[in-house]
Length: 391
Image (tube, rainbow, N blue to C red; front, side, top):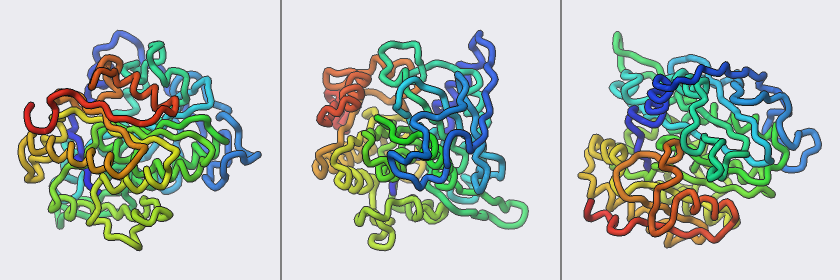
């Protein structure tokens, strides 16, 4: 599946900088046992009597949950995830971004091309920096009262992998635990065991997390057939070179993450290397016509362009042209997909102050998302003169 991994000068670096400059003291993160509040097995369907309607045992603020088991980060350090208590029966499932690695060079330079552990996410959570849609004091925030589940990213595989890969030889040998799918399943099992039947679920993520939200949305919808699920991919257009995809994807062994009950996405029935990101969106949107799926991009996203060029692709005009073509292909083959394309080069939007002000096609993004949450028909809003031809 095509993707554009983000540079490490990403959202989390910005939030860490904001943390360092902030005058507020760090709040201690509450650690909650992984099994608190439910079965945790992910096998029950909506309405199961042994699952609470809302998770018990969560304290105010952010709670750290350590699932244990086979979960792991790329260099063998522990994985944990974070949950913020809400007041309504609605859940944000937020996949964090932070690069990718797929060969000896990219996997050897942790902190330069991908996030190898959860420490930076933990620091941001501890600081409780309220920016973008994390700002629960902002009345314009449609998610201010929701439970919020944050899935850190530390495996270099866009939350899709299930492999232990050894790159290089001799002194340069390095072993990477591409366990993004294992970690994601552990978090979803906790969600399944702690929410009987959410009224709404918002599946999202920035950059590499955008691809996590797309891959795991069908799994969540399948588990909660009576819940309204909205998927929103933030700055993950899937524009890469074919050669890069064929070299990187096999390293992760991501086959098991695909929704096998959707024929067009079943690895036993299709060659995954023949697919594009558009195929994932088309497959899941058509299989779940009562749910909304969406993407956000800027017309010349500097981060996605950077990686496209690093892979041997063209300039920002070529990247933008391919991004628009992918969006148009999804639009032409679905009735429940919408795109919001803003002007400029900014990478990611959910975690920044202009989440509340960015506008395209005469509408603010925050209002466009609110409409989707109200089950309005999906539509696309695109900036004027951002057709992939001119900056």
